[in-house]
Length: 326
Image (cartoon, rainbow, N blue to C red; front, side):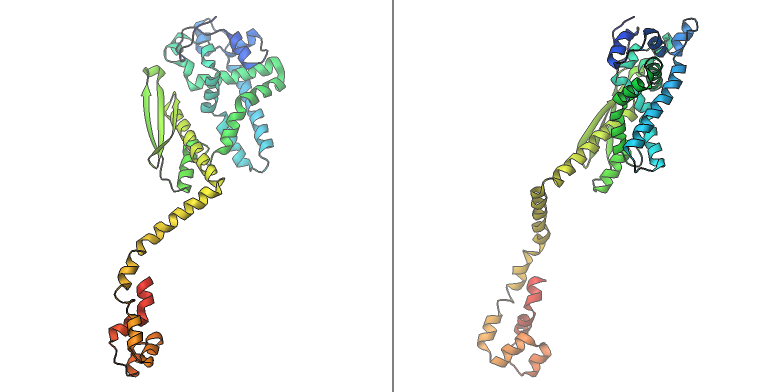
């Protein structure tokens, strides 16, 4: 059977042979058809075998391959963190996104009820069907071929998950990064379009009044996660660029210095104009003892020397450095 896909809104499943070619594995037509048969279709067509047993098997194969990849690729991570990483890779949302990239929803055999409510793009149906396809690959082609398929589909997911923070999601990681860099709290704006059963959400995230990422998805959460990932990568790229350009870093530091000193600069001439300019007159017009007292003594020492010079001029001479620079 075949049909035309229009963003998941179809009335007939496409030819499974096309999917087999896209997967690059020689699954038999019968096994693949069963992997694509949702229980809603089976019940409406006389109780046909469903894909649920293959889904059960594929879930275990997927978990084994992902666990082995994480264990081998991260030898220093503790068991608890490895378990969180695995959960992030094999959770329903991640599987659904991989299935959408394969356009798997176009090949699922659905009953009329699921078809009418957008079942071809439901995360649960997409995730379950993908696991069933992995199980079908294991049955017909063996563990080696199933492992290769999992690696092709999920290695990018594993790599992305390894970048995430403690929360193992992009929104949490972005918030941790912006807090670390003093950029404030990310702000999300989400808009939706399309009919109720086939809505498309578009999210944009702003950090420090700059729009740094956007994302689209079939749910608000998925759109926000994609936008957060884009923003996280943008901020990280900017930081890497700054770190790799020492001249830019030095220039930036130099540009900041005058701003720190600028507020004090205008005050210095104004404060010293009427006082610091006086010492030469005092030194020329008065006897030596008065000049000596002006340079090294306090007001009391000046009085005891018996000098006739006016106290204000003596005070200005001895106190001019703090007045000029303070």
